[in-house]
Length: 191
Ligand code: ATP
Image 1 (tube, helix red, strand yellow):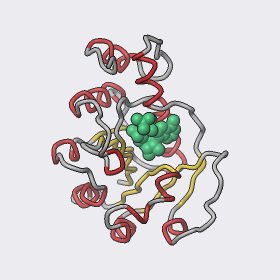
Image 2: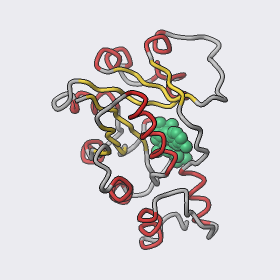
Image 3: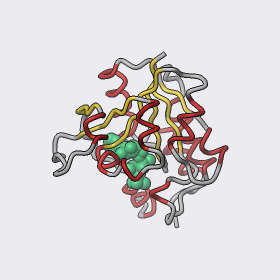
Image 4: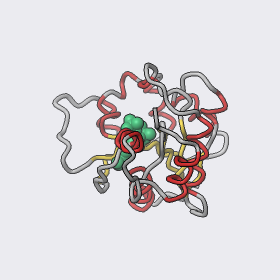
């Protein structure tokens, strides 16, 4: 089975993530995409996110009934800072063909990730690039080792969604209805 691993904070998961994931699955002919919410993302240590329970519950609601979408609570259960290398080592027990999906911005600082060379030996690096993004001035070995694919540009961010909720603005069409109801029910993102 060939799987794509899609990590993130997912606070909340939104249609930008979901539409992109479908596109990657089709372009790369993957069997499924596994969404993995981080407990604490290494680049977001200084920022508080919603409880991991809420983040994973919203993810479950968003992918419910979609056979080619799955999730893992490995990072949430492990706690601490979520390093991709640890997650991949765990996933390798189950999957032998893993493609790690990262954003183009992540590629530009991939050398600062924990054990980037080891990661590269374990998986194939698939990078999402929007048409508008420019090539880096200096291309490193990670750039050359990755497969850059063009995915649709869906201009939605979790930050914008949280801000809209806080300002009592609607978030229909940005997140699945079940996620919207969950946010309302638990009064998330109000302060
Ligand atoms: P925040 O606004 O809170 O930083 P986010 O919307 O960027 O969150 P993350 O959970 O940080 O969401 O993102 C997880 C992954 O999804 C990252 O690799 C990120 O690049 C990617 N991603 C986020 N939003 C989009 C989008 N609209 N289209 C494509 N990929 C996205």
